[in-house]
Amino acid sequence: MVESASKTKRLGRATRRAAREAEVTPRLSTVRYRVKPVEVVSADELDRIHCASLKILQEVGIDFRDEVALAQWKVAGADVRGQRAHLDGDLVESLVAMAPERFAMTGRGADTDVEIGVDTLTFCAMQGAPNIRDLDGTRRASTIADLRKINRLIQMSPGFQIGTGFACEPTDIAVPWRHLHIMHTNLVDLDLATNGLTTGTARAEDCIAMARIVYGRAFMDENAVLWGMISGNSPLVWDATMLEGLRVFALANQVVLIAPFVLGAANTPADVVATVAQLNAEALAGVAYAQLVKPGTKTIYGQYSVSVSMKSGAPMSGMPEISLLNGIVGQLARRYNIPWRTTASQASSKLFDAQSGYESATAYMAAVNARANFLLHAGGWDEAGMVHCLNKLVVDGEQNLLMAKYAQGVSFDLLDEALDAVRRVGPGGHYLGDPFTLKHFRNAFIAPEILNYEAFEQWKAAGGKDMPSRAREKAEDLLARYAPPALDSSKREELDAFVARREQEISPNLA
Image: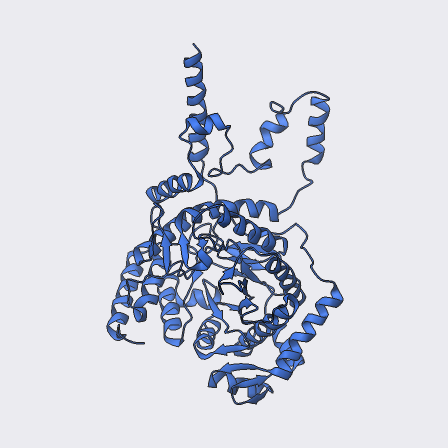
């Protein structure tokens, strides 16, 4: 009898679990903040940082290592000496003011439009890793098949609102052709707005051309479907490769993400406030230049920031100084009234382990509490960005849902109805069977699937699986259920032909 009852209970739990897993969680739509932001410095202190940034741009100057950009700055009235532009504060502020405070990005799926604004939150998985840690835990150089697998996991995970582009580097494809195959999977395996590569004019133009095949030129003239990363070379350098890509994307009405690359104490001063002043100067110069290219360019104020170990020279994730830095950057971006980006799930760990989780949790909470608007690397990041961990990717996708719930704060809409439940239950009762609980429990408290909340005995009876094992099962299930998003066959053929033609035109040995 006892064995039978125990078996019945296990079957009941299994049935309930299967029912939960069968429910389709809708993809996150636009997430609007209701939680108040952390403010690390006072208004007067923020003004000191802003003024310090403008002094850097005017007195020290910033290199624009691109003849087109230098000519444009001269016409705008900047003091250009060789490759260095000394930018007047009034000029910078007038240009930055042209950047829109919000804009839409449009995917081709039914639930894929998202607004990026000064009061919204968008999640995007990591990009740029030359290696992956596969579902079985093997670390190796990444390939185009891995990139397609990652894109399929992103497509199937409702916690990602936008495509990340080169989620890993397909090292099995020659570098001059690589952007073509990256863009191909971004457009075929995903139906989200996504990233396009901006490393030079030709690659950026190829990415725009491929997106126009899928979306149509007229549509893209009016709608943003791609975002491009424009990375700075700290300290105080914008190079031609990135500026060329910026111009292509800006003139095509697509989004540019301006991103100084900060390694605290390595390419910035060994001080949090001074580091912010320098990166802010770099970001303001980039945002201003985007508006110089085309007023009203959809621009995200960005930065990638980590501190550096003085023992090894390696970047350190999850550090308190970077959390404070994020808080200040958030205050600055709100001052300029433009959306801003930071890094979410970054970790330096060599395994998907406790260190990886601690570092990422710190980065997530610091970013959301600073009210970041675009969380890049919110999925899969390990080993300081050298590895894209597929198991971590699906766990981070679930964490994004939790972060979204937190960011939206609390609602008072149900308070009066809930107080009626308090009156019904009274002292010493419980709410499990109350009509209010039965009506609202599904939306009241989020219930993650991959995190485990069973009693030890239940967990042990189910196999005693650790987090990577549970994540692997989830990933395998998502990949098994993946179906390619619909794409007109004529567009697919044109896209394939474009890649084949460009491979013939571009030498695989091109530097």
